[in-house]
Length: 153
Length: 245
Image (cartoon, chains in turn green, orange):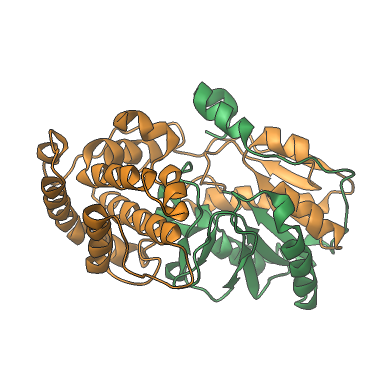
């Protein structure tokens, strides 16, 4: 369905009308080899631990998801109702692949999984998240993170 | 999502990402992205298919081995059930009685409560079998949810749910909890289709809960509370609104 050619005209028009910024040159940082990388997931699905503050419209901050969180700890408060949630309801990993990432670490395909992961609420324009993202980068580096896996919704 | 990659990478942290809308990724030009053809909400493709999810994840992670960028690679395989339309699930109760000519709020809420009660056993089973639920954002149970929803429909106001959040967010969260409650319940029933379209057609086309949400939407539209007014657009998906117009 994320193939635009399979969408109705209305859905296509709506998606292409969503704000989409333009950046200058693409920055490029070099990671260690994959089998040595310590990886953290950053999701824009507006997920968080149960009982944590839900995301408000326009939220530019993030929520912390400990690597030890159980699937039953994670809920979603993304402000958009225009994407499927039934996959997430049936299996957390289709939206937030923490268990799959841990399996890849056990197999030695990646080095390790970070202790903390993070979620933004992707309906907010990314420019408004810049400050939080840059600050979070420093925190992740202090935590030994080598690379980030960004997962949209 | 791609925007964040610019900030992280600029701070010296390498990123790789999954892309759902190729046209956006082409414009944002993140350092490394794997475009996937899956529907919005399912970036790893298919629930309960660890092998498929691992293939997607591994492809995305391997982009970290690229020597130069930006890299935008396509994952061309469709999710296993992406184009399977099973049709709306059959229901354990006859909701038809509730979806026709329910005009009075009292009748609607009565039908809704009965329907909700019918879903309870399936919800409990789903929670037990999956070991999780996404339906209780605040950790409170079904009785509290019914209370919040019916009170809003009857009085147009909410009891204080959480002082940290706006009325609109409290209401939206309760409505999402309600949808999750029903959809988790029906998708555990044996032999039911679990693709997103079948489930959406069932919920929005056949349940009293959907009509209650439409009632909530009408109240929000007229509300003087800005956060509630804005919530008008966050309750029913755009592609289901035609049912209520």
